[in-house]
Length: 329
Image (cartoon, rainbow, N blue to C red; front, side, top):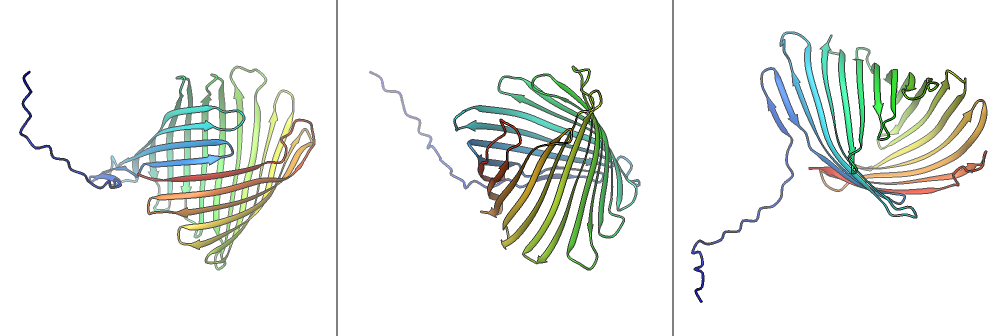
């Protein structure tokens, strides 16, 4: 039996140490293209294991270099899946992308106005599609010392996996003020919206709410915060109203650079048509830490310490433990 001749060319095996890719950046006189670090995150919360990864992209172009006009384009590709390991196991899987082309007018060095179109699309493992489209006008300014302010007016169209389409017109304000001479920061974010479901005639409702917080830096490693949120909605056809509100206090302690611990206590309640439906006291602890320059982690414990039962069928007191690990690549 003839034996095949063996090749006389030596096989070379090269092993290289894996290195984390650096952000790619291409810049010209009037444009810049940046592909930042991608990111990944694994987390375990309750009885669910979640995994996600994403890769963003940023592009800016000045068509008229001597003016403050900027054409901006940001995009992000994302993949995520979840596996349920509890009494009701399940599996969810999604891939999607987000893109936001915008035209920005830099009025001054501290003030800008942006007109943007945003499109988000997700596909599940059965090829069902969820889509969100936004048209927004955003103004931002830091003209007042210590104050960062933005105002957003927009319209959105959300088509969920069941092909239910919700239209919303909204206005959101956001302000953060550093009080001069004292380590206190104030935040206020009110909003109003009008929403309707296309397939339902009597679905139009008005939404209004706000978020506010006061943060006091007691010392360099310690910050104490108090805050509140409220959201109200009212259906135009029936006059039915719902009101959700929450109040909290929080202490954040930086142990070492890159590692911090937060302790939080809060109270939340739900009212419908003037009747108290449920309220609860919530306790929480959270820790974040850095394992390397590009890998971070977090531990979170949330406990519904006291559940005041107002109607049958409400959830009993519960404790949720979450562990996450993520980073850049």
